[in-house]
Image (cartoon, rainbow, N blue to C red):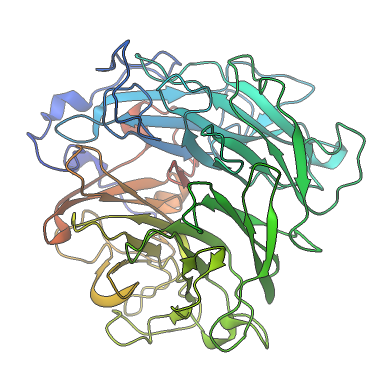
Length: 503
């Protein structure tokens, strides 16, 4: 952990993209409350209908989770902070801090903001923020629930609405949002959610609640349906995206023990999922991991599946190829996996990738996908939270690999750490810079800037770094950082600010 004097006192104002930087005084904030700072939203939402535009002004916004933050005497209740975009980029002057509106003594909340997703669930043109929240005491039957803060012209609603609930043993708070039935409304996919409430035995599998949702949390009478992609869903991660190019989102789920994880592809459709089986690499080895991202890396109209394998796998597992983690890329195609483009494995031993594959680096952590140079090909950012810098253990880093007509490539790869010239702060032992990443176009120039979350920074207070994007891609020049205190998070101590970044 970092025990040095915080560098936030000398930080730059937080701005991503072109525009005039904020004056230092603009960073002053008042005590935390659930009232949003006035934003530039409109009662008529932008025609862009961005999945992460909470106030409908046509610019992407960023949600940041601090799940370990205390709320009064309730430890690890959690906070969510939102920074709004505009023509000058994302700025801490346009902010909102969401706290839990009540403290229920029977079912106290915890880890609010541990997992964050964004989508327009009710179809009103404003993106909504979806989050998992632990409810109750885990040792006496507590569980996780999915809540939504509704978007609108003044930003997100202060009071969240519950959408789903599940006991702890069925589900660990992971979920995905996407249109998996093809009706043009986002659906909610959870692991085991609502199965216990309905008296069903569902120790493995997923539940889909079909959209659209209404603001009372109901899903307009749509049916539930269950899928069981694997025999075990231990420690699952999932992502939704259009792998088959048919306009309907598909579901990718990875689960299993640390040494043996498998990944399933389930193709979405109006009558439910079609199980396409387990993903495998070009040599037939099982593809499994701890993180998943989906995006069209080669611009062929099919979403490609990126599976991050941060920990080494066992025999027969593609993860056995690495000491320090890596990425399995499985290309999409009609009906599922591409028949013409073989899966690839990329690690720090791949020619052109900065660094060296070393034990514990954690490549494949905190995946995100976006276009960082405006060429129309989606790029991939991955954290290296266990990267050692010289004798500084687990200082951390981030890699950005470019998409191209031939798929994900190491050509033009970029690497950032706290030792990179222009990056604020100092690389220190156990900082674990790069535990989370997000690629966000905060100023609407069609180039995604990089956001790096580091919840372990400053003894667990956490921090976020920002990197601008231009025609040459991402740059450390003008990069900035801030912590929860900048946004008015109180207390910020031990909050793990940056543990999750909304996508």
